[in-house]
Image (cartoon, rainbow, N blue to C red; front, top):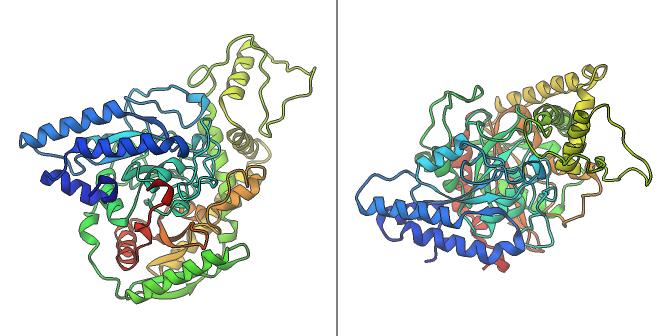
Length: 510
C-alpha cells in the first residue's frame, strides 16, 4: 500500500515496525506534492532536502535500536504563520517575504522533538485574515475537489495539502474558524483546541485573545495522535494552560451511550444551503444510532457573533501589526520611490495627485506598510484603529467585549444541558474563487458558524458528513466545553467508524 493511502496512525506504526522507512514515506509525499501542487498552490515552501535529511536520520536511529519519538517519520506540513528556524515564515505577505525566524514556534519544536518530518510551509490568507485563501500575496490556494473553488481560509493551504494527500497531517491556526472552515470545505478533519491548550509562542499574532493552533488530518484518530504531541504547558506563553495532557488516542474507544448533543435553532436560519442542511441532519441521525441523544437548544446571542468578532479581531490586529513599520520588522520601502500607498479598497489616488508626509520617517512608515500589506489586511487594520480611537472605543470595542461575555454565557448555559453542540461548519459548500472577493461582508459571513467558538474560548472540531450532488464535501462541527478535546475526538472518531465520508479522495488527485 502507498503511504498516501495510509492514515497518520498507520504510517507511524509502519515505520516503527520497519515495514516502511521514513525516507520512503517522506519521498512518496514529496513526490505527490511535486506533481500536484503546481495546480493547487497549497505550499509556499517545500523543504525536500531538509525533510529527507531528517527522515534519513530517523531511519539510522531506528536501525541502531535507539529510541524514537511518538511521531517518528510522520510527514507534517506547517502553516506559514508558525515560526520555523530553518524555513521562511512569511504569513503569505510581502511584508515578511524571505523572513527567517531565529527560533521554532513551540508547536514546531514539539513536532521535531517527537521526530516528525517537517516537509514544508503551507499557503494561507495574509496574516491569517480571510476565509477563502485568496488574500495570499503568493496566489490563491485551489480546492482539490474542484480547482475552480476556494478551499476556505485562512488555513486553506494546510487543508488542501491534506485533502490532496500531499501530507498526512498539517498544522493550522484558528482565530475565527480558520482550521474548521477550510477542513469542512476540503473534506478533512480539523480540530480547534480550547484556548491555551496549545502554546501560541511562535505563532505570528493576528488576534491574541482568539488565536489557537491545532491539527488538520484525515481523521479524529490522526488529530488525537498529533494533539498529544503539540498540547501542553509552555512557561514562555502566559496564556498556556497548565492542565495535564490526556492520552487522547487511548480515550477514543469509549462508547457514546448517554452523550447529549445540542442542536441549535439559530443554525437553521435563512442562507443555509439545502444540501448542507441534509448532511447535517443525517449526521445527527448517525450520532443517535451510536447511542447519543439530540436536544434542541438555543444560543440567543449567536447572531451577534460575526459583528462582535469583526470588531475585536481587527482591534487586536491593529495593535499586533503596528510593529511592521519598515524599521523594527518587515518590508522597508526604497527611499524616493515615489510609491503611493494603496488604500484598502485597492484604488490609487487620481492621476496628478500626490501625497505629502510630515517627515521622511513618516513617509518611510507609510510607504513600507502600503507596499507590504495587502488590501484585506489594510482594511482590518483601519477598522481596528478606528474602533480603538478616542471617542469610539466605548461605542465599539468596549461594547463588543460585553457582547462577547454574553456569547460565552450562552455556551456555559448550553453546556449545563448538553455535553456537545453540533451544527454546520459553513452555510454553503466550497464557493467559486472570486465569488465573494468583491463583497467583504459576504466573505465575513462565511465565518457565521465558527467565530463564536473562539469568542467563547472553547474547543471545536469539524469533519465531513456528506457530499453535495456536485461532489463537494459537507462539513459538520462539534463544539465542547473548555478542555473537552477527549470528548470531541471520541465523538468524531465514533462517527467516522460508522461512515466513510472522511476516506473519500478527490478524483483529480488520484
